[in-house]
Amino acid sequence: MGNISNQSISLIQQSYNITVPYQDNVCLHEILEIQALNTPSKDAICYKDQTLTYYQTNNLANRISNILLGKEICIEDYVLVYLDRCIELIPSIYGILKVGGVYVPVVPATPKNRIKSIIEDCNAKVIITSSELYNKLPACDSKIVLIDDIIQNIDNLDISNPKSNVNSRNLAYAIFTSGTSGKPKGVLIEHHSVLNRIGWMQKKYPINSDDILIQKTPISFDVSIWELFWWSFVGAKLIIPENGLEKDPHRIIECIYKEKVSVIHFVPSMFNTFIMYLNNSSISNTSKIKSLKWLFCSGEELYSKPVTDFYKICKQYNQSTTVINLYGPTETTVDVTYHTCSYDENSPIPIGKTIDNTEIYIINDKNEILPNGECGELIICGVNLARGYLNRPELNKEKFIFIRKPNGEIVKGYKSGDYAYFDNNNELIYKGRIDGQIKLRGNRIELSEIEKAIISFNKIGECACILNDINKESAHLIAFIKANSYINSDELNNFLSDSLPAYMIPSKYIQIENFPLSTNGKLDRNKLLQDYEISLNSECDLKTVSDYERELQKIWCQLFSKPKVSPIINFFELGGNSLLLVQFSLLIKKELDIDIEVITLMQYPTIRSMAEYILMCKENN
Image (cartoon, rainbow, N blue to C red; front, side):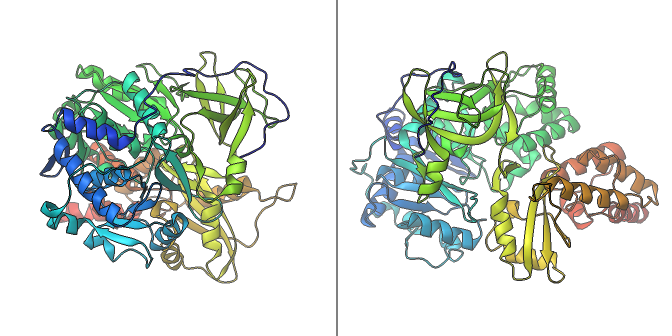
């Protein structure tokens, strides 16, 4: 860990709920075991037409855990969970925890080279997967447990709770995030940290056995943690939706209505699309979300307009849903601050006050605490801190430092890399990043990881990756490259898809002869973007040639928050994504009274081509 600052921190401490009792002597799987004893016949997990009671969930987890014991899994051995959403997903995770294993979630869309890196880094002893996904795994020495075999031989497997010496200070999971070194880094979280995080949530925003949660966050992201475990604390029910639902507001609404979902999470960009869908859909659709009690947002900066728009809908239908803004890095067990949003929020919406057993300081570059109103780096202390990064001693020294509290106590803190300040209400206001790390639609990305992957392409000498249209739904990655010959973007994309997930692959590549430098000789990223915007605006001078082009251009200008847009530029190169495609479809319906499916919009990615398609459809009708 890092050294204690030579300069003691002497100003008042800026935090809340410093010491609060919590369940620090139990493990996550023990919560399930207790609930299975108390409410064995109550429904616990639902997926499609399959349902497991608490008794059945615990028994299946026991069967999996006893298989893992046969594979010689010991305390703090790493076990990869490589599964799509299915009824066996949750019992698989609990089965790993029951034997003291550390579950490492990897979604099937992860590139094979990235999976290989994770397996090697954590030395995964076992991989739990399905026969369908098995062939997508890279070659490795890990033992394989196929969930299909477990189901086929389920009656022959031991259902007793396994005996293990695992305790609450042992690791529960390792989530791999984007890394500056060019490979993902594993964040190590202990059981008791999760117990504190969920215990606070249950106290502040309580649920009961009648509540229904939905697990729609990919399990490789830390937001999934409270979705995966919270329900079991009170005997509630968890809905596991089919793949793809999380990107479709219509399917989300239908699921909320059918299953009477009361707790849900949105990344703010998806929340915006959800609100837009509600505002443009029928009364029957809007009234279908009445069951919602708590609506949590995290992963990106939350703005006031979607919140106030949502509350207007709630008021119109006499609905009492509360929107909560959460903040926290993966290194601090999901979230460490919260703000309950009001009906008259103004931007910026605070990231709020600290959760239980958490302290936050705003410091300058000398590790001195700053007074309210002054912006600095946000430092997080408390029981939610990760143990550290897996196999990264130097990074641990850099990011997990020791600081001296005002009372003289020395504690470990995490340097978040986020700028923030305390306002007059002692609530935290987020002001952006210090380094090259970004958030794109909830995904945490180190730009240097993308740049290193691009430079490994044999024709490219230099690269600078930039997030354009930051803080907008059209935010997208642009890679500026210097190469000794023409680079085909499709060829480069195929190359990158072996090592980078889709959300880390740039929307556009721009070849340049030289990179602009600032007066101190460093890369001038602002100049890169300025030159790009100038070239983009010059393309906008191309005139529209039909009424449909003019109407579509107005819609695009609204979507991308631009004064003008070229009729021949590609939707995706401009920053278009699946969420904006849904919004585009809604706006075409609203402004032109034309129904066009999202899949069709993808086939005509320019204003001109879409206008021609609409005209052709009109003529054929």
